[in-house]
Length: 288
View 1 (spheres, rainbow, N blue to C red):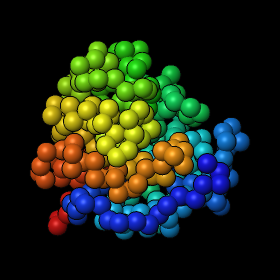
View 2 (view 1 turned 120 degrees about the vertical axis):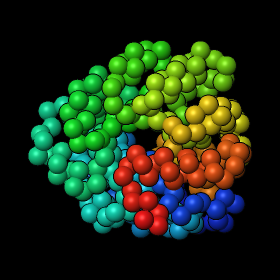
View 3 (view 1 turned 45 degrees about the vertical axis):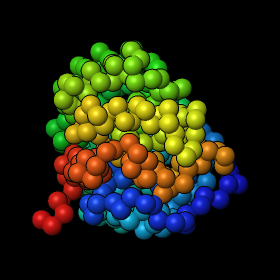
View 4 (view 1 turned 135 degrees about the vertical axis):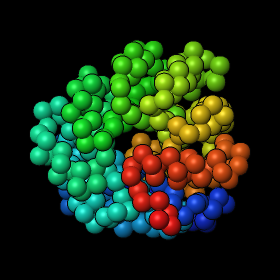
């Protein structure tokens, strides 16, 4: 996708987002920060570009997730948090050996979690999940974890053993999608029912075999999650969609509008778009 120009403009979504909506998973890849040679380069995706997308979607709060492009160099993330201030939080990449001084410095910038990535060239894998979780727990941070949900049985015990809060990315990221009555999806529901697991409704285009506009196979899983435990769900755009091809690149408005189909009412949509994320990431409540 090196030569692909990401579309930034377009019609507003049909869904009018609550004022305090939080995009809980997006990335910035700025030209001034060198990307890691360990992976193919991604086209830049700047704060200025994302601001255009935010305006189109009618949102202002975001959680910036350290992209694989920078591996364990959090410099771009830190610079963005310095610019965005209280409208943003961050998910960094840290190793178990990270010092309290470094964690404190990152916390003051707005970092509230650590990325654990088992898909593609992730910097810190689930091998280090418990060690990282232990290091960050004293700062009130949580790990966010991404893996192929088809292999969730291999992760269930490791995740169940976590005593603190954690987040599973992209509706479990089943590659390819399973059905809501599958054993793999039942495992995700068991983890949610322990009470310390959040799941993001995001990146349906990455795994769907049906594709746009409805992403009905991933949509069926999302609807089942909403029916089961809306209080454990978050929403995210996953902008700038670094794994999408020009053929699968999503309409950014559609990443929000799918909730009109997946979530049955305004109150539940507000819970998923605003309230859960506001509490998890410590954003000031709207109107407070």
